[in-house]
Amino acid sequence: MLTLRYTQKLLKDMKIVPVEVEEVPPSFSWHANIMQLNRKYILFVNDATQLCLMLGGIRSGQADKLVEKFRAELTAYLLLEGIKKQHIHQYFLEAGEVTISRTNSKSVIGTMNEMLQYNLVTIGEFDDLHERCHWLNTAIYKPIDYKKPIDVFRESISTRYS
Image 1: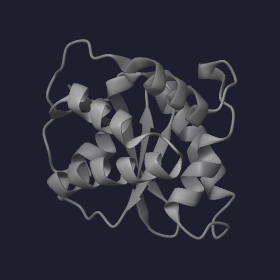
Image 2: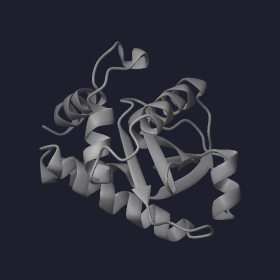
Image 3: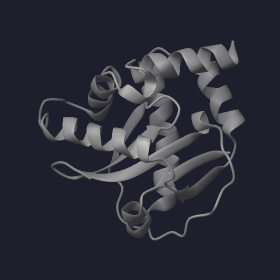
Image 4: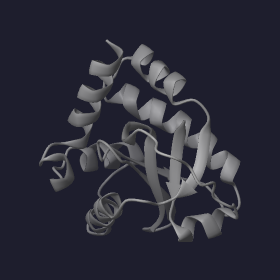
């Protein structure tokens, strides 16, 4: 099960009630929060790898559109990062249906806050969100032993599906 763990702020904005979920493998768990730069964005961070994805163009109450756009944009971003299409397909196939839940990891929320700070000091420096995500995903973070999130995700997905 692919679990999107929304902060209280995002749950309220999307006007949805979260579902309590049991243990989910960290690679299929993503934390999400609203981020305000020059407009509203949604920041997703993978629990296992700290890989981030930013989405724009989602209005309040568009929960279904957010889930749909998350899948599409994650696929597009991973392809740009050179991850094989069949590995991405296998990831979503194994992940299964999407469930919306509450946040459960202070560590991931801490990484999200760190990414937010990086974003605030780089407003206007990137042409598109994929370029910004690439920059964030090539920074090093303590929870993944000072490795780059894209490298950790790439290694994880290629090991799992090769």
